[in-house]
Every structure is written in structure tokens, then in C-alpha cells.
Image (cartoon, rainbow, N blue to C red; front, top):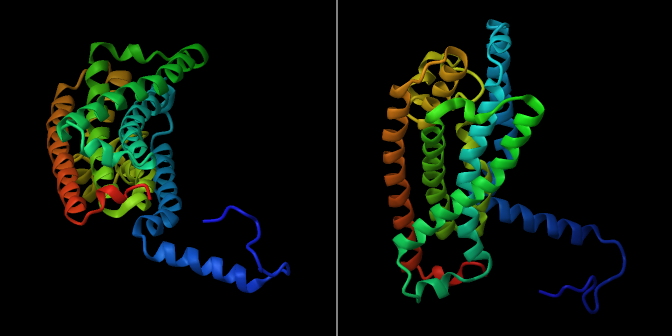
Length: 276
């Protein structure tokens, strides 16, 4: 495609027809890509849900945060660990698509399992680079140390990373099948779970029918465990056990989804076209 501002022979006059043609092009792009369409109404809906639950909780428990110094900062830090873990996995995978390097990897001796493990390691590195400065700032400015979570800190962090990897595997699989239009899911998919992840408020603030759904994800168990440590000084090993058990399931699902879409893309001859 030419990068010139004007094509040979094109009219220099302002044209609503050309504007309309470009708008029609983008409408067709959105209509042909459900990830792009979902992302348009995704964020406003989630913001209403999340802050609506927070407002409901503050109204019912006005003294909660006065007795729980650091609960919000701790929740934000742990949420960022999970989000950066998933994003680090997905972006590392997308680098191969953007650079059109997937074909080179496929003809190399690299195994798919080795590729996945390498993505997990890069996810961990990216997460540490992103979260450590934030943790230092939280300590220097807000006098909150994430190390105050004690010896269970490593278990919390690893559990969140595991779930981030599971989501990263699913997003990467979708990108293999649906192309680069699925990249937006790398930024958006986790926030679909944010209203029921109980990041900033306990699961009990949710409607009763939502509570079992929330507990079917490891996130709710991790953040409930976080609040138990900060507010009650208790280590809820039951929540950690549930989190690791559910993570094992979601990792298995993520690997299965990734392998399924990989085979679909291979059979359709799409692997060598990624990045075009």
C-alpha cells in the first residue's frame, strides 16, 4: 500500500464520498471481527459493574477501609501481577506474529511445549520488571509493603501468574485462529472477570447467584485470602488450595485450547500467513 498522501490522478477537492468509503471500510472490518465489536461496548459496561459494586460495598460497610490499611493497594498490586503475567505471555507470542517469525519457529527444532514454557518464563520476567517498581513506590509513598503478606506471598503471586498463563494461552490460541484482530482480547479478556474477581470488595457483596461463579475462578480465592491476611491476620490455606487446584484446571484448558487452535490454523494453512 502506498504511503503517499495523494495517489496519482486523485482529486484535490474535499470529498465526502472518500470519507464515506473509508468509514464503510472500517465498518466492514468491525462487522467481520467479533473481537473488535465486543471491545467497543466492553469497557463502559465493566466500569459500571466494578464501581457499582464498590459503591454498594462502601455504603454497607463505611468503616471497612478505615480498619484495613493497605487492602486496596495490596489488591491493586496483586491484580497487576496477574494482568502483567497474562499480558507478558500474550505480547511475547504476538511478537512472533508481528515480526512474521512464526514460520521460522515452525521449521526449527523448537517443540511447541518448549515454546509455551519459554513464553511462561518471559511472562514472569515482564511481570517482575513491571511490578517491582510499583511495589517500591507503594512502600515509599503509602507505607505499604507487599512483603507484609508474609511467607504466603510467593504462593499468592505464583497462583496469579498461573491464571495469567492460562488466559494467555487462550488468547494466543484465538490469535492463531482469528488473526491479529484477536489481539485486543489480550488487553480486555481479564477485565471481563474483574467484576466477579472480588479484587476490591469481598465476594459476599455480589448477588447470591454470582458467588458460586466467582468462587469457580482462582482470582476470588486469592483476593479473599489477601483480605483475610491484611484485615484478620489469618492465613486462609483453604483459599490457596482452591486457587492452585482451579489454576491446574485452567492451565490444562488453556493448553488444550491453544493446541486445538494451533492444529486448526495448521490445517487451514494460516500459520505462515500470520503477520501479513
